[in-house]
Image 1 (cartoon, one colour):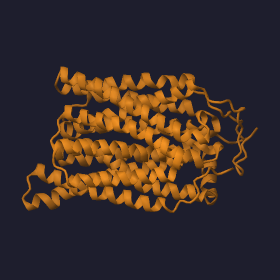
Image 2 (cartoon, one colour; image 1 turned 90 degrees about the vertical axis):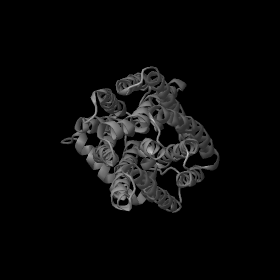
Image 3 (cartoon, one colour; image 1 turned 60 degrees about the vertical axis):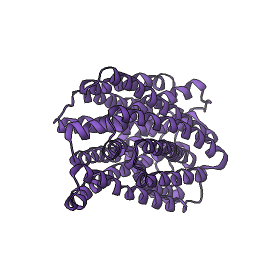
Image 4 (cartoon, rainbow, N blue to C red; image 1 turned 30 degrees about the vertical axis):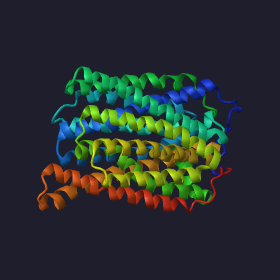
Length: 443
């Protein structure tokens, strides 16, 4: 059966219920890629790049720029790849390609040393492109392994198990750093993370079945051209999915605040609270533990009270948590703030992913998750870039001229820039109130 571009119909295999093995294989992928997020994005490489590879306030700016470049590239390619995966039933294949890219360049971070700014940025950007690109197709497998009424629970379970994977990998890295301190050991953490990541992703490729069947290409078309036409049709039909578009706008806004906190948490801890590498890892382990709890609890809240209530609650909690950073000045209090943030931000991310699966037509899952990814990548580009620029500009132009030492000026700049985080979360929450219909759209 050929694809009817005007109606968006497609061929499905007879729907077979997802097995427990398939779901646990899907969870295992999250277990592995969360190790990358915990070690590279959050606890180790971000601080290592900022303090040892670059140094000073410029490290914060270049870190935000590196993330922004990676996110911009993924934002451009992900919707086309999402449509391609839907039409050709190759979500797993493309997931494998992006996962391999991320694993390879995560391992290559081992070779980044002091002063290697260019390759430090390049290897990270490529690892991040692989990580973010893979998430499009990993998320798009959710409708293959869960019925609509189970998506909230399955998504929450995946996020919780993924957070636990980050804890395990951080514990391995921490044990190594405590046993053999030094920069070489920190660099070895990236090799360990790459191996952990790769091993955990194997089950999804071996066990999960895609429920859609590939279709014969129309005459004169290629996968790319058909994907572009399907994507264009999705945009043209946006009036049919008004509530989804409203949700995407809200997500685009509030996700800026979430990404700012995720990507700069280690830098904030190191600069504002003087945390060393071991303390940063312990801090991120605390965040991961509360993320596990948050994922389970928000999964249950979503099943019982719905996505709107759960998502709104998690955003309010996140705003309160970030506001607390203006009133705490001790390391112990910062750890408490981190625990609260882990609980809240996991709810935001997990429930947001669930909403897409709940409202999208089944046959357009890849396209809708592609659009969801575009919104995420845009905010992942703008968020860190804005925060890094604000923090650096405030430090250099406001605080240093007032007699602050470079370190105190940098800390003050990072703290003041937190107002942008709160602003994005608040505006996103306001936009979220405009979404009325949270039920699945029928094609």
